[in-house]
Image (cartoon, rainbow, N blue to C red; front, side, top):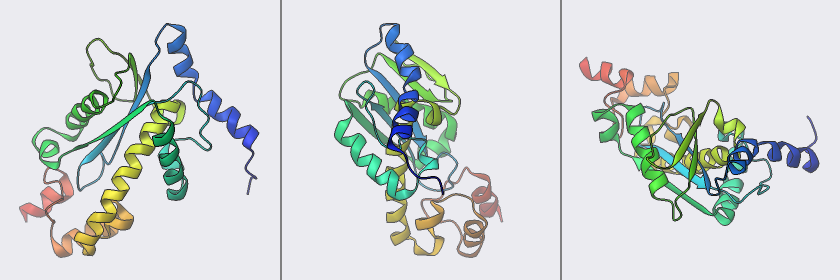
Length: 215
């Protein structure tokens, strides 16, 4: 196993600010990142977060939330909350997801998350989603949660928030294993839906659930 090096990690995190640095060179000052968690899940809301970090803040092990252990995500969550200029998260309800579609509902949630920030940014980076925020400049980065510090921070806020919700769901609906599958369409989860039927927080518009309801 490779030994953790603070020096190497500082250099890696510094490189995560390259997009933010380029935006600052063009005169933008308050730069936010926005990302979501749960878009591909079969249950519950999508959680969307927006974060404005101080310039070149070093957050040890900052990265795409999916690359981090739950323990490291929790530690980074606390550090982001303590150090961010502003952060916010919103829950996009199941009804909105089922009425529109998950992509459009997530876009709406991203706009609401930015609007919920205490300080409004003048530039927003998003993870592969193109949004119109009026006068606020936006830029979509494919795999942005691995390439931008601001988006990585937002991905952690969204992921930790949603995982905490999933832990609550697992107490309310223990038969579905939400504490470990987080509502995603694992083979085990699909078999449990087949066995017990959908519960109230399953998204009715998603094919595995919709198909079962047709039977």
